Length: 202
Ligand SMILES: C[S@@+](CC[C@H](N)C(=O)[O-])C[C@H]1O[C@@H](n2cnc3c(N)ncnc32)[C@H](O)[C@@H]1O
Image 1: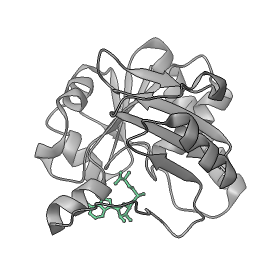
Image 2: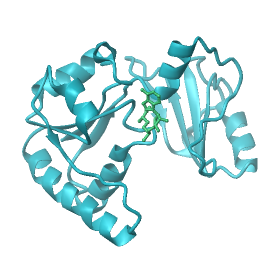
Image 3: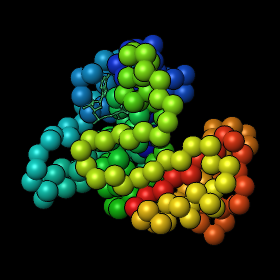
Image 4: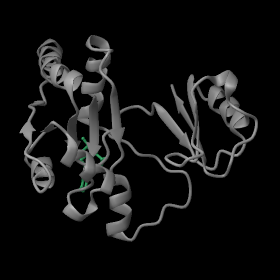
């Protein structure tokens, strides 16, 4: 199994208990650089897996494949953790590794543990409160929408479809005993609980 572990924004006290437990109990721990390595150090020895910022797509793909080859063998026989700054699913190296793993090694189970991302860290450190819809951008085109308070999921999906969104997930009470995750549009209910989200992808 391969687990992407969110390490938070850089403060060693901002790792989750779950992240610490996984780091302690993994057979192998990888990180993408020194900052992540330092955060991981109290719990595990780690190896830096190089992911250089090069533009040559062919060279880059070869490197991703090489990294995936290395990780796959170990992840088949045990638990491999990959520690990443912030959250592993937001603008993260882990997303690329996950894609390559799913393509070449679909038998290896891949999961992630959320971390405190730079987005929520920013608000905490600058005393900013976000009270309306907002945009997070790295300069690329908008490709996703996360709709909170999704008490009327079907209605939200209709609006998103008109805006060009094509793939949807409905999620309710995540990480609780009553968790609901529905990825098939036809199965998404008319009504949702207050603790719910509709995700749309273009
Ligand atoms: C490749 S993205 C990684 C984002 C990360 N996965 C997350 O969830 O925050 C790198 C960008 O995240 C932002 N970032 C990450 N950690 C940060 C921090 N501690 N303070 C400010 N910005 C940070 C910066 O904009 C940086 O260029």
